[in-house]
Length: 195
Image (cartoon, rainbow, N blue to C red; front, side, top):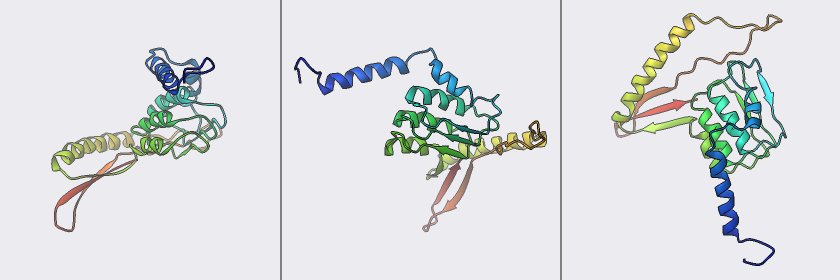
């Protein structure tokens, strides 16, 4: 529509996309996102954190996702209920689950996440079926190295305590698994289980 009082849907969509690319391509961190993320970094003693109804959008949740990717050693629950998190924000959170194995609860009710965002969240979770030995072998080798590293860390692990002497929550040193199976016809396949 080219009337004086409005713009076409195509013009609006182009303007929104251009704005998104400009902000997302920026090298400077968003100061508000950095503020939210600072409660989630590796130095934070927080175990339960709620950003309920804080008007968090895509920019802020990208900072939160980056902080979750280098997880806090104690955080076990993050509540983001009632914000403006969209599918792109869900993708930022989903990327964090590739390395964060300690978060036990993530509240995302009353946000703007669709089935597309849910797919992004679940990409790093669950089970993947591998059909080729060439896919499974390098993965199994990598997982064996991770298990050796975990066992080495467990030998020197000392649980932390808070000021009252209560033992702090510390996530288990998690290593994904890759197990081999045979289908009904005797053909081998592997199940790669993450998070």
